[in-house]
Structure formats: C-alpha cells, structure tokens
Length: 75
Image 1 (cartoon, rainbow, N blue to C red):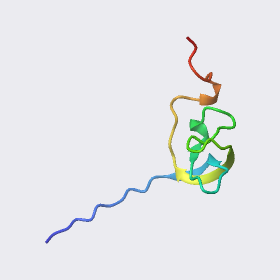
Image 2 (image 1 turned 90 degrees about the vertical axis):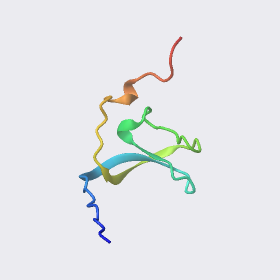
Image 3 (image 1 turned 120 degrees about the horizontal axis):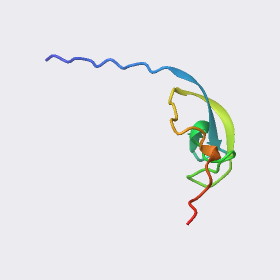
C-alpha cells in the first residue's frame, strides 16, 4: 500500500509579548496585540493577568491597536 507522508510547513516564529493568567491551575493566555485592555483579565477565570514572552508563529493584527477602542457600545 502506498502512503504519501504530508510535509509539515514550518511557520516563522518570534518572541511575542503575551498576557498569562496569574492562577496556576488556569491555562488562559492571549497575545498582547489582541488584548483590549492595558492590563486584561482572564476570560476563563476572571483573574488578573501578568505579562510574559512566548515563542509563537507570527500573526499580524490588521485591526491596529485594540487598546485605543472604547469598552462597550454606547446606545
């Protein structure tokens, strides 16, 4: 039987600033350029988050700086 192994494409990675949940049992984290607040809270457990760095594939955010947007929608 013939089996063709698919080659995995290597994506370029870089050190990226992230926010990690401060609780040890929570695995929540987010990229800094996708955060809406200057010091965000965890979406999973609502704890405070701490800034750190992680090696991640490069992802561009086309929306610009989301921290400049106002929270919520005014009616």
